[in-house]
Every structure is written in structure tokens, then in C-alpha cells.
Amino acid sequence: MSSPYYVPSGRLPAPAFVWTAACAAFVVIPAWLYAWLTTHSPLVLLDWVAMCVFAGVMGVAARQVARRAKARNPLWMGGLGLAIGVAGWYAHWAAWLAIADAGSFSSLLGAPQDMWRFGMMLAEHDVRHVAGMRIEGSALVAGWIAECILLTTLPRSLARSAAEEPFCELTNSWATPVALPRKFAWIEEPDVVVHRLETAPTELLSILGAGVATDAVRYGAVTLYRTAGDPFVSIDNVKVERDAKKENKEQKKTTRSVIAYLRLPGMDADRIIEACSAASATQNTTNTGQAQADPPELAEAIDHLGAGRLEQALAGAVPHVAATQDGVRIDAIRLCAMASARLGRWAESLLYWHALCDEEPNAFNALQTGCCCAMTGDPARGEEWIAWARARNAASQEMPDPQIVTSFISALTQSGQAARAMPYLEQMRAIYTDLGCTDATLLFVRRAPLFGAFLQDSLPIVRAVLDQEEGRAWYAAMLPHLDGPANETLNAWLDENFANMASVTPASA
Image 1: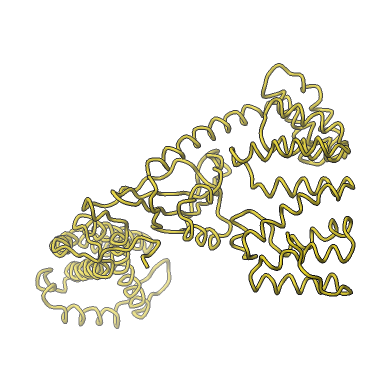
Image 2: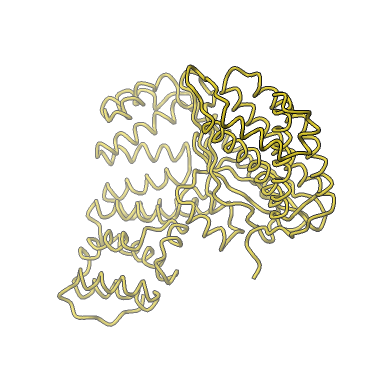
């Protein structure tokens, strides 16, 4: 069975050896510069900076060998990168000893035993002083070992990683990387997302979900690799730390890989890029609108709402619900709807949510309107709003559909209408029976509650509507549709919560 990820072909063209030899000769120049700096620099810190720069130069050179030679054998390229690093390290030592008058550079290059002997003499007798501290030979040796590890490891690592990148065998060229313009939500559970992408890679965008604001400090970054065949994708979690003293200035950006070079069979890279570009444009427009919708007229009301001073928030927002400026009016209505709902004034909140739906007819506002209808004792009208919200959400994908259902169930039960909630509870039950299992990963992808949470949250509703025998039968109806582990979980839960009930025959769902 083929791997879901890109697998290098293992080819190592002959030019890879030619380019490696050329790079080994080239690194003599930066090796001399590095040796001169470490000899004449009065600061140890400057020596370490120079060492990192030298290692970086050799790493870039090793990576270019793999790219130019079109090498697709990570193991061999790692070895060739290591060879470049060793050559640079060896040339640096010859240059350093030559500067120290241990011999000529050319003679030292051909006499590694003399270099070793002179180095050991330095380790035994040379003593340096740094910042008033006496540095003995043993510390020098430790520094030399660390230097050797860095100078040889970085070129090896970069050469190997270059050979692992996607390559199109059809066009005999490297895949073209394209960073998607949309920033996706930060991936909280990478293992779950990776598992889902491995099993359903064509659902990439739906699995990643909606985008986040362009100035988000935590987000998921996606890179596509175009080829003449199937594209590949890599996903990273990115965290940005900003300097509080410098507005909009990045202080530090850390990146952690979530998945690398996953194959997207049968997908069109251009269509994915186009879809994300359109979504990004819409997102930017929305963000701009939101930025303009935070006018100074409502700043105090917003602060009151955030601090829980609901009456003050209402008092500050009500005068602006009839404003002529769209941004001010819509935000004022939203503030009033939220504050009155949190105060338990459901009829008042319903008026504001209904008005907000006229201004912004989206699934979230329709959901809130439907829940307010339920809380005011008008479940029939609430069901109409919920049906509209779900239909709208099916097209816009604003939120998981189970979230709409569970929110309405909660509103119905809080308002004492548990019987009205049962049909929606049965829809939630159908999620588990349709899946046939209660695997947490699959439920996460479906954005459904974990099975244990569903059982405990639904129990008060079921008991309010059904008697003990009917209640157990309602849950037991799932048993024929679930796998072994799920059956064991459900049976144990039934025995615990319906302990005095005899086992009932599972009814049809």
C-alpha cells in the first residue's frame, strides 16, 4: 500500500558528487575568515556568533547541492552534507593553526597528524582568560567538540531535509511551494487532525475549518507543493509574540510542524489556492468592517459588558440602536442583545436578536433568535429559526451543526420544555449510531460531544420525559448499531444509571 506522504525516489544523480567537491573547495574561504576572527576577536560571544554564521554558510551550500543536483536520496545527501561540514571544519583548523604559526596552510592540510599533535599541545598548555576567568585546556577541548558537532551537523541536516522535499518525477523538477494566503485556526489537537487528514486528505479545508484574523498571534499556516501530479501539503502551528512597546512589531515567531508533505490525491492545487484567496479577501473585508464597527460611541458600553456590568452596558448601548451609521447601529443592537440575555430578559433580548438578524442574516444570529424564542415560551417559532439557521449554516459552515442542535436543546430544557427537546436529542443520538463507534477522534472531526458527555447531559432530559423502563430502552436502542467497545461502555453506563431495571430488548432507533 502506498504511503499517504511523499516518499523520495532515492535517486542520487552524479552531479551531486561534483557539486559536493566544489562546495568542499569553496568553504575554504569562509573557513579562513572564521579562523581569523576566532584568533583576533577579544570576545568569546563574537566567536560563537562567527561559528554559527560559518555553520549556516556550509548548511546553505549543502542544501544547494541537493537542490541543484536534484538529489532525492536523504541518506546519501545527509552523508554528502556531512562531508561538506567536515571539510569546512578541517580547513578551519588548518587555517587557525597556520595563523598561530604552526606551519603553512597547505602543509597542515596534508598532515592531519601534525594538526592533532599541535592541538593536543594547546589543550595541555594553553590557558586563556575570558572576562577575568581562567579557561583551562579541558574547557577548550569541550568548546572544540561543541564546535565540531555544530559545524558538521547543520550541513548534514539541511542537505538531508532538502532531499526529503517533494519532487515531481514527471517534470524532473522540484515541487513549487505556495503558502496559502489564509491563516487557519491554531490546531489544539495535532494528533487528531493528522489522523483525520491521513484518512480523508481531500477534506483538507473542511478539516482545518474557518480562517482567523490576519493579525492573529496563534494560527495554522499551510503550504502547498505543486507538481504535475498530486499536490502535497505541510501544516505548521505558528505563535507570534509581539513587543508591547512597539505596536504591530513582531518580537518572536515560533513554528511547530503538525504534518509534512501529505499527499492530496486527485486535488487541484490551483483550486485550493483560489478558494483560500477568495476566503482571505472576504475575511479581510470582514475584519475591516469589524474594526470600523468598534466606534468610540460604544467603547464605554463594550467595557461595561466585558466587566459584567450589564445594566450599564445596556444604558450605554440603547441610545445608539437607531443610529444612522451602520457600524454603530449593528454593534449597539448586538450589545443590547447580549446584555439583556445575560440578565435573563429573554423577551427583550429576542427583540434585539431579531433586529440583528435583519441586519446580519447569519446562522449564529438565527440560532440566538431561536433560543430566545424557546426561552420566551414560543418553541414552535424557535424551531423555525433553528431550521433556518441549520440551512444557512450548511452553506456557510459558520459552526458545527451539532453545536446548533445542542444549544437549542439547552434552551428548551432550561425553559421547561424537555419533551420538545427529545426529537433533537434523537438527532444527536443518531450521530453515534451512524458512526457505529464512539472513537474520540471521529467525534472530534464531526464536532460532536464525546460519548460520555452525551450520556450524562442527556440523562436529565430523558428522565424528565420517559419513565425508567422507557429511558433505558431509549439508550439501549443504540446497542445494535455500535461496535464492541462502545457497547461495553454503554452497557456499563446503563447498569450504573438504571441499576434497578432489568435488561430490556433494544428497540429500533
